[in-house]
Length: 612
Ligand SMILES: [Zn+2]
Ligand SMILES: [Zn+2]
Image (cartoon, rainbow, N blue to C red; front, side, top):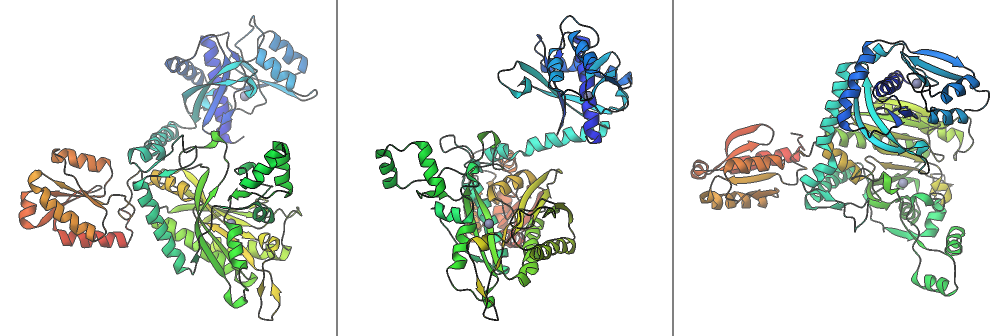
């Protein structure tokens, strides 16, 4: 238990003490710390509502103020059972009803295991600890929400009330936590995605399947263009591959049947399906035949790698052609449980900014370095300046790995070296490598301090082996290339979700779906606005003209709300002078400029991908 978890769990005891002062008959079950705080499950005739929080918190404050020591009491099994029978566990004293959940918990403790109670004030609970020294050590707390939960998570058991709270060492930390939550709510990409018309999820299309609306599609296209430019600089060749392939391909790669649970089930050829139906084949038989390869089908691809491998293998490769660097914005499909789906960050179909490199052992370190550099360049260009890396190394005591120890030593050393050279903070984690090679994962911090795991770079000694990939070396011998998988952002869906929250929907000019909005002060200036619009459109600027009869103040407010980077206000003065009054979303009024001058300025900002 970390110090914070200890503090929060101690606060759960304080919560239970407080509830018992109000409702002495409450029956408590479990009260562990959780990621954002703590909870305690209880059974009570009174249905606790948010309106009760004030009263419960007031009692909790008193208990904290009383600065009761947490006292550990070791008891025998018999003593513990006797106390539970008398209703004295998770209670302020003897009660008529036994402490029924605590009795059950006791029955689950194996014979011979030590049993301890913790006491603060009159409250005694069955608990292994640990706790803080005194209730006064709980610096600041707050009850946050209510839920219901079955005892032991089993629907056959009684339904309990779950009271959630959180606690911190200081008031300042608690305030900062709620301020961040508030900010995160405002930035929630599901909310902003709706408000700004970026993407939608339609029940009839399916959960976890993203429809990119025109404005969201602009952002994605701009990102793809940008990443594409960076890739070409690094010598990548872009390829396109289909969304489905024969099961046999994924049997060779090992993706099927080993990762079957996380894939959509296979598709079967129509003739095969009718033949099987006429033979009266059962579902179980069908599944068997697919697994053992008697029947071949097609799979929605869960990965792009096997197809890129086929492109590599389509011609004889010489050491002179290496490295081969293939990239694709490749859409893949994974079966995620519906409970895990939410917005763009967890989906069932997504497009990876995928790439595969095939190189010699000697080239590996340099290729890894470039992969890292590419990822970092793009993150920095988007103002995501804080990141750390996790390097997954092999477990030296395990023999599950493919590739020789010498190859692993080299690859692991290369990963560590590039992390050091690029000056990012990183941690090495033994045993976290995939069985086929070591890897490096990126964790990015957004503007409000939340961490997101994005892309990854992985060395692979396995797939070149399974597909028997080769190249001809300088001595004419046939050698095995090493493969690197890399997707700096993981998926465009997830990355856009993170970016929406990072920018709070206010995308920089180069990414903004609508870059400029022209706002005539009255009908008289709409024609002039039309001229400006044509000028901007001819220069490929994403601009629009607000022809509504609204007052100028309302037009500005709307454009501001829709986070349009630049507004051009047009009145009699501007029209006569052939100028536009520039208004920035961020900086407000920026004064008048000639239209060509304004155009030149924003073209420069777009070209430089200026952040704001
Ligand atoms: Zn405890
Ligand atoms: Zn791959």
